[in-house]
Image (cartoon, rainbow, N blue to C red; front, top):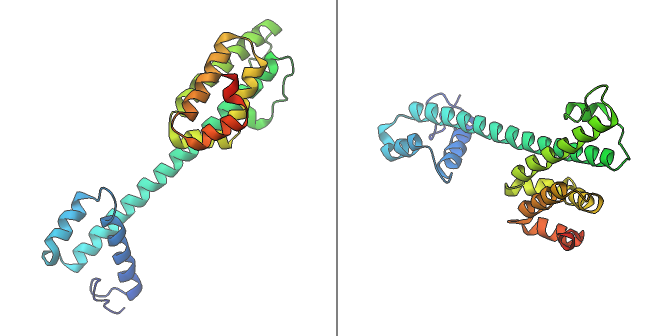
Length: 201
């Protein structure tokens, strides 16, 4: 292929452009890799082929880190969906109006013990609801998670819990979940006000 000036010998124009773009993005990060900073400082001391190899390695590393972050975000969102499903299922059962379990619900961990009597089932659902609320309280301390929580209908679900249950521990945890979710996020605060939830707290 043609030598594209900024690339290494034998590199096509497209490949050279790709490397130049990678260099610009990597160098423009809030905390660029020290290795790249050092290489750019050396300038001509580093051959074009060595720079190309370095940029390719750092770019692959960056893409791998981004994939991990995206997987983490997906996992957090999925976990919150599961926790909200558990809270709704437990609340419905405790209110005497159990929801039918779907295959998805079983995967989310809301399947009660087999062969349990009414009292045992009630205790199980009560404990599961408290556990789900405690886990949600932890997740929504993250600003991005709080937005996802609101988008998933979490604010409305917490409102229903506060309306439905007189049990002090359930009400307290539901209020704490909302309190953490709205703490640093104007959008979630607005949703809580519009739903009338803040008036219930």
